[in-house]
Image (cartoon, rainbow, N blue to C red; front, side, top):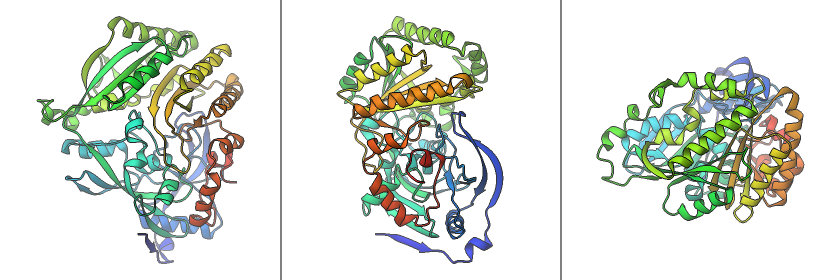
Length: 479
């Protein structure tokens, strides 16, 4: 059942959100934009601000923590609405594990609030910094997508502030079509001001993790299939410089009741916090500066080779690891992306059907080496079909490649990624808007056949066409 609240017309005038001018960037810091940033302080103020934009014939882009790699939260039009002040936990049911939180609450806020009570977010990305609103708008995924799906599949209800000034509650059960348009809808239908989220019951603050080397990408995907039923998480690192795409795979499973004799301690926030020193020796803040001299193709080739050889010597082994250390590798080394400066980082991520994934991903890597545009990092995960109107995932595998963006090679890199798009689309694959910096309207039309349906929802919920972004314009979703 819909829950719609109409705000008093005067509200937008009596509570004027503060605004400042900023230079913003995508998280990869390879694209930037200047904008006037508005920061509403609550749901009603957000709805009133959106209504003011509609009445004034203006456009705006919604922004959370700014963790999308590219231009999804940038606006050439010059107005951005920052939702991070909506950061309250409204309620939590310790029996069901259902939390209602505002859209600016981060993944880190979720685990810090609820892990000591024995609950962990069902879906987390590789970093704890994104907001709930951003996670819903991009329908982000984690290392367990084949089992639990995207973030939106752990959400029961969304509170949406519309550009008409209305506040509407959208239930996954009562309005599945609208819910699936908002989930993964790129923040183009309304502002997610709060959500009811189902967390996962855990009995320990640790996971049982297994690591082992694989000699080829095909072998890695075979291991994914073989180990899926017994695992709760799976992820593979790939040496993109190697012709066979050798790598290291990690699987993990939750510990059951009684498996962790020290559960009361391991569930505490203090036990989860990342250590100050790497391997107990080197302070984490020094790792990125020390890697900077190796931040060139020859250096990264050597680092990748060393990582694989170390894993090959050790062979398969199993160990206990805290949830945070396993889940949030990207947060382990502060400022790690500084090694990509000054041009920044472009992550190119594709999704391919299970039957063709190994062959096509291997072909993409061959083309990278042939053109001497080799990604410094490659990561692959297993997925299932996504129910969103604009789905990125399918029954198959994703492959994420991290490329440095250099001033002299930027155009060549963008052209290379678009050429790879053609290969991916021809094989029935998809792109991922949360990472995208290169896709074109022609590619989007081929990959997302339900764009017309999505635009019908947009005309209904945002009749004045307020909500936009540089990504949405570049991809031809809005004009």
